[in-house]
Length: 262
Image (cartoon, rainbow, N blue to C red):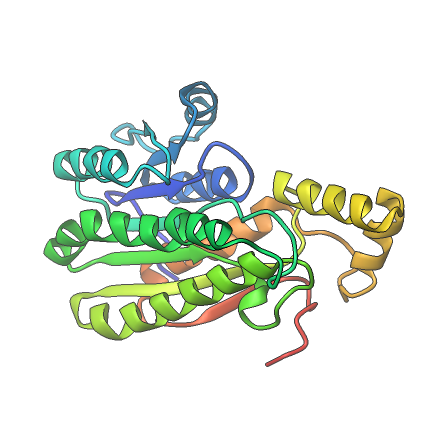
């Protein structure tokens, strides 16, 4: 099975921590040059210093940018892609705050739409020329199992994640002829800062302890545990590889069997 990404360049959003950082490590282990994108240069510097190198020519880099500042985001990524075409785009952004859909303000929805879908479209358009020229592109969106089954008390997130999945499915049909695939990885409960945020929100909302909340969450997971970021990253790396060239337009839950729908 061909998993070799030597000579390929990957852009990983949210690459300084959690699933993004784990994905960057896996892509680097497969030989890719990896550029990490996140808001804070200090955290990026620490993350890029930890990336492995498998061959002498391998080079890693960083871009400090905010997904909400679309003009700066596009300028910085276009400059990086102009210097070296990007072949793998890992679209990974932290989720919106919790809360019910009906109580969320219009500004909450607009902020999430801009941070997720508009930012993703901005990045895609900056990267597409290089992917088309290389006849090799992998867009991997890190979304949520809420694409298949909405999660209670994540109203804005459910809405925006679903929109991103539909955007991706549409792109898969448009770009497949160019050697570009577009797929979605749907993490379940994973040991990241996002999980800590959800636990804290549910603790405040219910008055239960974090241990009680964790126990209730894990009761719905056949694997009986939370995922490690590296386990999500392994699936991302496969979808980025040459071996996954005929996998296009799919949603892949990586959730220990929690999602009940097919």
